[in-house]
Length: 466
Image 1 (cartoon, rainbow, N blue to C red):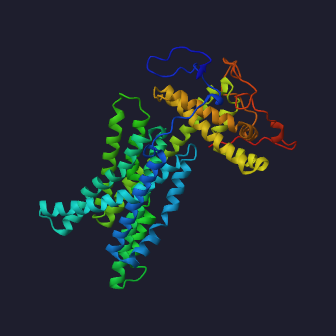
Image 2: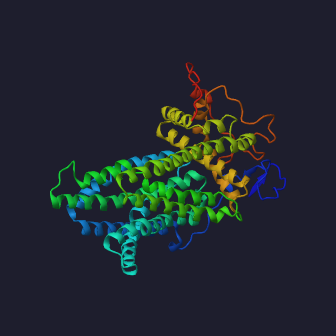
Image 3: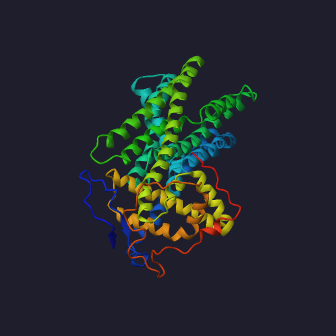
């Protein structure tokens, strides 16, 4: 069941009119779908997928240990894990505006660390043998050609498969370019972690065989290049594929970018990967030239794009939540408050002081639901409204209303004052839906007192800008 405060026709290009405001049915009218067979359960499918990835992880680690030995394996593992927390923290920080579901995050990292490396291990070895037999190449030539041409194709395809699967089965969670960068970065971080175990462990084994010192050892040189100098290499390559799929996910069907962007991103990832691997065969001067003139500028461009996409997400929240503030689901100041990460943090601290962890959790959930509500409506205005748009909007509004008594007063105190409303003129819709009731479970205004969050000595903070 659903009602609309007005019902003008949609735009000819399929976009939703900003004047059509969906009003969800009361929560008491909701019902659950029939129970499905256990093999169709999402929990069963998720469990089977992660079990398969765990098996791949055990197999790849066992193969690496067998190839380089137990002691080099443990040393490589200890050194390879060092950059992982830093990279994961950076990607998860970028993803704070609209955090991806934990299933997507764990799947992305696990696929890169387990499945993609297992495929690459066998495919790279097969490619090197094929080059040696087909072109009658020497071992040195096959190693160089394999690193420059075979490895980029195999590894970027293996890593990009994870992004393809997320695009096909979890497309609703790809809401901006930032999602493509974050998910591809997580895949590549997992891949680089397992690959570094092999390279660092092999280097340690070589040093142990010849009795090399610590400072002049191959292990130290490998650690400097792979962990300190270029920890961003694999995430940078695969981010091209992630950006391509993110463009496809946010482009209307029928547009050429819908299929050109993923292919172009995948090809660009292979070109960057091949250029980087090929530079290792050059002189130190040539290697540093590629590093300074290609890798660093492209890395800086991707970092800038990630921050721009993050700011764009906040602008989307501020713009598209104004429609719900106009209809009375939010107060006029909330769209701007929710578009500031500093205000969100202050609201969580305020709610925690008054209501403990439950209050902080309510603010966090409230901000998350409001963010996804803004993204949902932004997609609809671009002509990308999903078939279940009304149901998803109703569900998000229901969750907002559930957390509203604890979250909204904290947000109103944290929002810097004075703050102009995000829309001009009188409200074109009634402030509360016409069916608002006072019965339990209805969408009637919650009984809260903002004064409880406003002590007498309260001074409004200065505006914060991201």
